[in-house]
Length: 128
Image 1: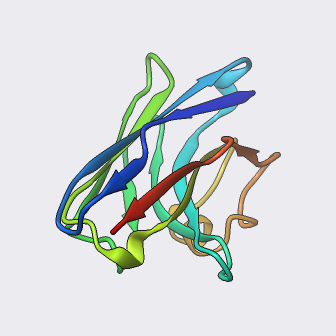
Image 2 (image 1 turned 90 degrees about the vertical axis):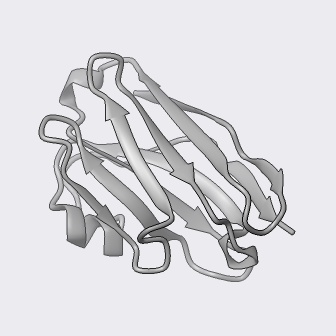
């Protein structure tokens, strides 16, 4: 499985950005997709996750009401619409996908999943 991200960049506080991720390869085994981020000097943290079949979602408290995760199961793509961005949202953002998960535990710890962890290459988001 390969994950390719697009989007990201520099935006002023209050602005918006959209991140996209496309999965290729053996994608039929993937059932949970999401976005994680890592700021300098901090651990990687979950931002938003979604299930492929039912579209259930979970969000980090810090982004609830501002970010929206969505997916196109037929194309195996998913996106993160980020609105009202704040300087504290500045980080490297990674898309991820796994075979199985429970959304809340996976959001809290990317190690809480079934099967191998698939990561995108990362895309920088800077809010300044």
